[in-house]
Length: 489
Image (cartoon, rainbow, N blue to C red; front, side, top):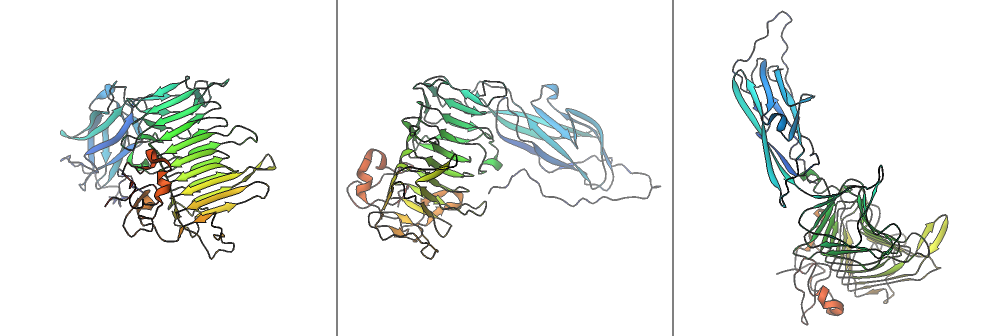
């Protein structure tokens, strides 16, 4: 967890009290000190205010100092706003600080659109005049234009995109509320997102793909599409729950996500058939990393999913939850959960063929295959199976590395060779830094190193011939590594 670099230590403030009859002595030198010399803002979307920064002004002398004026150098035209010791404004006069005391200054910024495709630097400064002694603290921010998607109805939360919309990478796309792919009355609409695009969602916001509609994410390992929250400050770089989800609704079809990085939301991708008898949403996902979710990286309710070369990383609940049946193929995937922001009680991978819906138990057949996959984490057991006899519950783990608790009260039965084939149990894959979502293999002594089945890789060499970040896997010689990454010597 990163520490907000603008936070300053709490300092013991020594206030020297004189007797009531003692005359105050002013510091005529006027030299102030500051906790920073420059207030830096991370990239700020234009028209949207920044997070508030703060710094302290110190009077290092034993005597009271009177600051003649504190003002923004840019005056009324400044893009910055300041608050001095609880009072907002652009200019202040006759501010006194007792000897060895201090006061806070708070700063934020809202930038105008700059019509530039790259962030532009916007500067100003705060000037301090103390008995003719001029000092300053610089202000620096990067302003970035974006395409903004707002709800289209008053007090609503939905914004329906035009049919067959294309999002390019020229500017970031910032979502407020839910951006919906598909028309209200149905129809085969699509949203295509080009390689290198950056999609930022506000708190509670996300992307919905409605019935008959299609999402196509065309990223590459070298130029991925990024989905994240819209707070770009360093503090929020690894904060889960900053936005909601990519939500594939009932009847959405032919969804494709490739070459994406999806991070810091509630649920990374939700593939959702909650109504019995509704058409199953379908998804092919490849070369994608989903990490640091407050809930889970991937949740599917009776969906149909093919997943290749994917990392389903740390989450507060599961990494992957396959609920109420469905049809699933996972090849060369790493399902890893080393959640450190709470006491996770659920396994990295959970599968069930039933759900309680409107006070009824609804069951659907579950058919799932996992080939050359890792299922591991920091819990004793990282696989959960919940079967209902009313529907089929079929799965196979072939050449996988898994963590199971054989000392549990009801341990998973691994004796069926049709369910567990050439599986490596409880041998650490030795990830580089899993608590920070780095699931690359750290060492050639990893249990996953050269332990895969080349036949599984050959199921689709056009996808699995390279790993999640574009490293080549062996062609016709040797064995590949298990998981999404092919270790490079």
